[in-house]
Image (cartoon, rainbow, N blue to C red; front, side, top):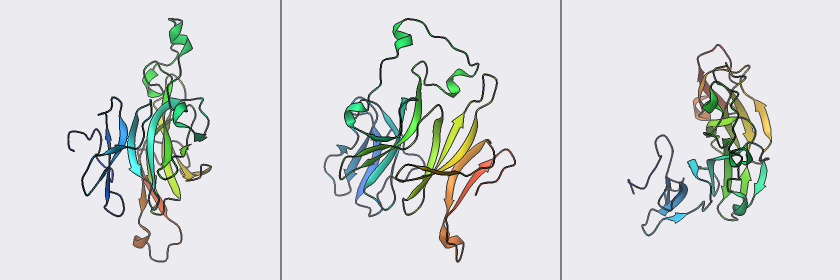
Length: 219
């Protein structure tokens, strides 16, 4: 199993019942999310998509997975089919011409393919796929609340060709709509992380925390 895991650091691979292990492997040719029963047997591929996945995690309190896919920036949020999960042709590359206008080019690109890492959810029982984020930004990290109803997402964006990439923290409901932006202004964030409600006696709402190199507040 150890050699099959491509990226496991910092992620909770066991499901909540301790019955299954989630890991990312390229054993089938591209990196996909695989699930292995704790009782043994063969692992099975939960995401047999043409596009590779990364940062796969269990959605808390649900029979579902979340993961990142480098998707075209013009893909809209919402439901997707497995057949749609493939990389479209880049017409500019087919012409043999590529115009680069940004000094920090790879801060918003995936080499020359115009792809961005975005967050997807897969319902394991129904096979339904939902794209949660989209646009000309990159998802760097995300963190689920303990009930799996909301997820805090860290987006990185580049304002212009001379800017250092900055981040925003945005709260999403599991069903898709963005609830609100958590930070007052863009910053150099790490995280986000949810503070356990047990640490705040009488708390009615979860608290999201993040480290930042700029003075800013996270709610």
